[in-house]
Length: 96
Image (cartoon, helix red, strand yellow):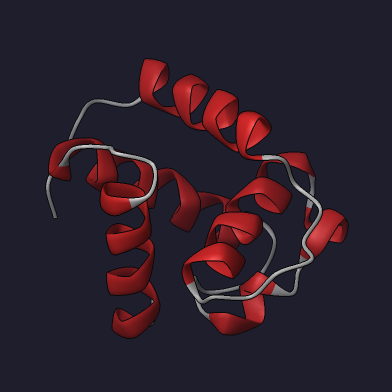
């Protein structure tokens, strides 16, 4: 995982989407899993993975895109929030 990307994603999740520090830990854990299953690390290359990595990974890569200040990924914020809600239901809050 790229620490710069992790910091930007955490900042995006807390400031823009209003998740707590512990929820961000769980979200980043699930995003890392999506990236690994797609054959990537959670870095800027993963942001370009798109739908070829699968539906969960596409939304995770959209989060990375938005956190890095890129546009044009095509994912709606509502679908991102719905996916995060599903991740938080099945993952315990963690702060790392």
